Image 1 (cartoon, rainbow, N blue to C red):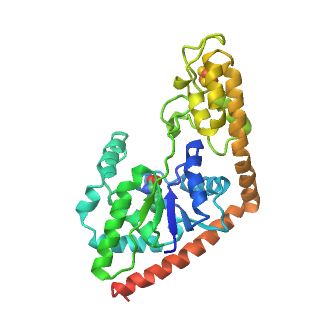
Image 2: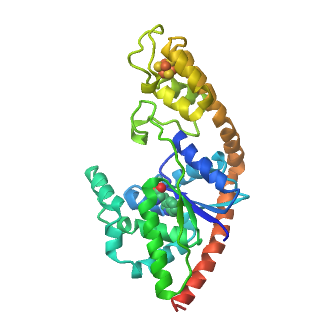
Length: 326
Ligand code: TRP
Ligand code: SF4
């Protein structure tokens, strides 16, 4: 069976080093499958409906981050969800036969509604309840069978399969039942050791300059017990060490040894890490430059839209036929 991949992210700001690990998997899948990678701007509206000022800017950031990370427009369709209107049509049709209870029992629904509700967001909306149904449409409209996502998205995938099954049962077989592609992605803390979050400003953006990277690494918190350079350190409690494990594994043993014996100071230890991260980000910077030139990324999004539209229109033609619409 032909492998078709779809995945997406909501445009909520610049991507950071943690996302790089996710995108590496998207990039690999380009070699073995037909890939659709989507900027889920409608999904961003489910929570940001009161503040749409930044959506356009964030779409550009995300497109450039994707391209910089190695999403190859020759191999994949990179596109903006709201530019392929068929997603909305399919989500609407799915809404006709999806029991409300299926949506209400999606675990993230109640959790997020309460959590964001406490932060002053009223998510007692139809759009928020329908979030997973729109996601099902995103996936099924390309008849994707593989969906690279994090574990948090598994309930949405489960619902997608249930919707596919119900459609196929009611009207005839159109949709495959897609599987998640789970990649183990190490959890990366922010530079202050807390969970990475935009509101804490503790992330290292993929679009950082070399100077910004050095500065962020300098600000990473280290072993608090290591006051002087001559104090032996405990790498296991140090954020710098965690970043070594993820981005500089070949150096971890050496650094641990030197840290424990006070053979290296934190300043030097951080300097090496910043150099390594900058080395990793260098090819991303080059690609970003290239795609920014003459706003090339806009052409790429238009090409992606054309590719995605063709596939989506073909599925919708079949869907309407099976449902005996027009
Ligand atoms: N819900 C996903 C997230 O928050 C984003 C998304 C939207 C998505 N549509 C999708 C992911 C389709 C995979 C497939 O990360
Ligand atoms: Fe952390 Fe490196 Fe300092 Fe050890 S030497 S505490 S690993 S920054």
